[in-house]
Length: 163
Image (cartoon, rainbow, N blue to C red; front, side, top):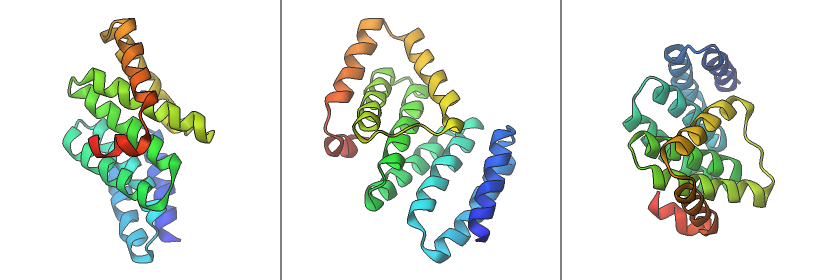
């Protein structure tokens, strides 16, 4: 129960734009979630922790957290975690200047969301829209569309080793 309470407090801090406080609470919640072995919630917290550290500019740590969440999402079979982790990794690739790869990943995540009828969490929507806008600004429309379609056509299982 304490782990989930801390997750909720972390979300409040994240929504208020206090990434440092969110990080502290997310990290504390992981201790409790590890103790009870709640792999699904650990995967979710790693996504949110990753976003918080990314907001502070630590792309390397964010990428590690997203990859770990992706692995746990695969292990638990959570398509919601998988789609979100791939979208978050796309934002890291975009920040590193790998725009084509970012577009491919967004295409793959979009295909998974469509196939499984998965919505995006409202708290992640603004970040996602910002990423899509950045790609539209930096890539020619045809280049973006081609990369996106290539991602959509990838089998998700084939995508995972390359992420």
